[in-house]
Length: 429
View 1 (spheres, rainbow, N blue to C red):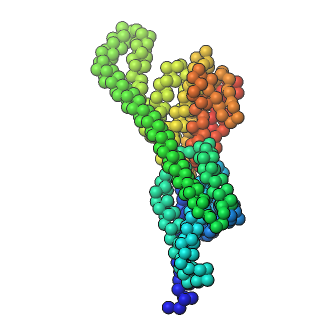
View 2: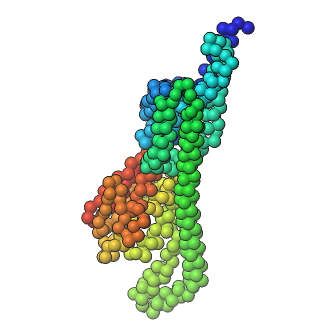
View 3: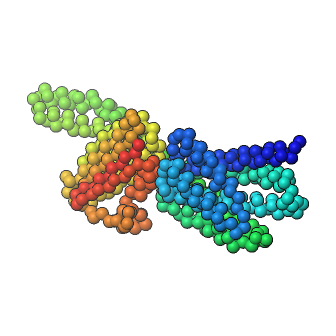
């Protein structure tokens, strides 16, 4: 077979492997960011991320790695929706991995090649350089296979601050690979092989650590969710016991009311009837069809009524598909806890009130509005609300976790307050 044809075939194979590498690289980005719809963003992303992930890095080659970083950021910001902190974090996390990998592959294979061949050997040069692309393609295929679920979980759980901390940790590898490549001696580039391997291992380890932290956060939220469900069923059992007890005494109560009416004691009969009517109030109330949210509302309703707080709930979230149960539980539980705590500090019980309205519309919009009375001072440090409880280890007043969920769903959180009231409004959709 003609040498030119063989070279063309291997070049075609190399290009195909590079596009496969770029595809898996882009799929990793897709796990954390929502790509804009359309063929153009897809095609631009495939070509652009192929260049970023497969660009050849040489010793003392600051231009190529800098170009890859700038292109990476442009692609993230132009082709994807989402938070800027996530877009920047992905560049800082993934670029050291791809740059260090490309440097190692081409530097090691190059040194092995020149042991047996010269630069003028066109055919072996083409075969070696194109076959070497198998390694990066296989690496990112395996990377996506093992990390795509973890990346999605991190995105669902992490707030902007958590992404920022991860970026700071990975910035060490980012700075290290830039510095080592720029300062590496061209003839003794193997001096920085350990640094390149360390960059890859460090950033992969950082992602694994982030995944473990996300697991811990989700597990903690799930435990709270299960506790709320347990409270719900305990309250349901208690209310059923009350109903059974009342049914047992029903004939007696009716006989008493009938006797009072026969004797003409109408006022006493009304008072007695009002008394027994109050005793059939059950602890289990149906505020909405979602059992998790209903459990939260029942638990908080009980706490609020015991504190003499006037409550108004209007919940219409049937068919909720936008937010998961853990996120809903966090929003309702934290905001109601804060509202109840604020109302308890009002000395006059008649001035304690909470109004909660929540709605999920057919076109996929979630709105949440909670207003409570207050007389305590609201303390803030920058954008964070601080607690006024004695236990200062409790940071904030429960708003930070709610804010993290709102950011994750790309919604808006609006907080306003004055001397008498505190309002939380959430819009997602």
